[in-house]
Image 1 (tube, rainbow, N blue to C red):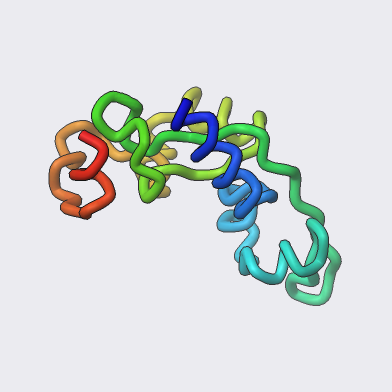
Image 2 (cartoon, rainbow, N blue to C red):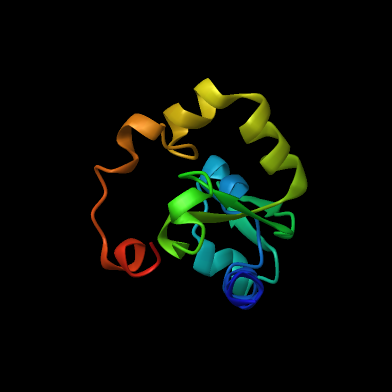
Length: 111
């Protein structure tokens, strides 16, 4: 199935939780280079592995649109869905009313 292939490739390209990386103010490249850790403000920080793909625009017509995906830990994924208002403010959930405001070719190709 195409989704399984895309999911595996995405998690391989983003092996550490993108939500945690953003929250801690790290750079994804540095975390990957450090094997899941990097120095932030003088302290060594560790980042959880990504195990889920979060669909920021829900699934539906954006199911295969990797530009709307985040690689996340289980804990981060649970938090996003338990805190939709805060997750929306952080850009991790895109309200249905704003889904069509993003016009990108990858989305159109997968409809």
